[in-house]
Amino acid sequence: MSEAISEKCLDELLLDPENPRLPASLSRDQQAMLDYIATATSIEELMEAIAENDFFPGEPLIVTGDGQGKFIVVEGNRRLTALKLLQDPSYCSHPGERMRWISDNAKHKPNKIPVIVCAARSDVLPYLGFRHITGVKQWEPLAKARYIEQMFQLTDRYAAVKDRYSEVARTIGSRRDHIKRNLDALAVYNVIKDADFYGIENLNDESLKFSVLSTAIADERIGKFVGTIKENQDGELLPSDPVLDVSVLNEATIKELTHWLYEHDAKGKTKVGESRNLRLLSAVVNNSKALNAFRAGSPLKIAYQLTSDLTEDFMNLLYQSEGLLTEAASMVATVDYDEDGYRVAHRILDNIRLIGRELKEKNRQNEDEF
Image (cartoon, rainbow, N blue to C red):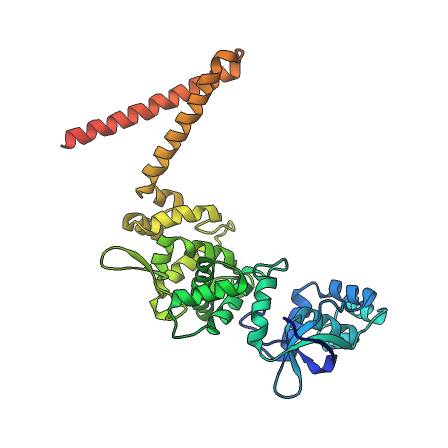
């Protein structure tokens, strides 16, 4: 961005109604936006820094004209809010005592602010990507996804969708799969939001952990479950690109996934639990018997035992154990006798015998059935 820096008075500057960090449910009038930023961020700390050190001219606000003689601040809404509250805390509907004290005792109350005026919002968006998506001042995951959607809407609507993903990725210095993952998760999130979060207690625009949803949907099998991935006649999994057509999503399974991920029981736990359990959920939704059991109330780990993935986990554990035991066997001749080590070895032997007996019995049962 090579535009020259100029100065604008505070009353010429407006908060951005398209700010990706604002909750979707928030009214986009100036008062509502200022109140939200004033109460949902650590605004007093920023006010105090400006009051003590003045506004840093090396980071001007980036603005674009609103067509009516004023300027919308596309980059720097939190700083604009702090500047306005320094001038007069009553701009906020419910100013706090600390806010009033900072304003009353401020060494600096800048009214003329350095800005860079851009011709259009689209000129500013790439800069926001470098700063808040891949840069050092990164936004929270939901704000990133909303920003990525804004960038996607600026691409050529007639181009192939994968090329549009690539264009956004190049513009902000990211990867195409990262762009698609965010847009898929945002499409699912919008379904959840439009359904008023399915009435789940305390779940809303601000409390929903978007990163958990994004991680879940990035899994191919969970993606297929909710519709971000489709299966063709040859059994090949393909992207469905809900950013272009939201009707590809399965609202019924999205509702189920939302309850599993975010609804808490009397003990404060969700059905999926920790995010590492998404691997188990992936196997369960891909197996009809396991999925029916999970839907009927079986705990996730119990339902998982009905999937073929359990056998794979079992074999992986055996291979890992074999490697560790082989390494221990190569060392045993050079170590001193240890009573604890002897007892551990016996427990390992007991478990090996148990596994061997169970496998032998399963093999015998298969032969008898034949």
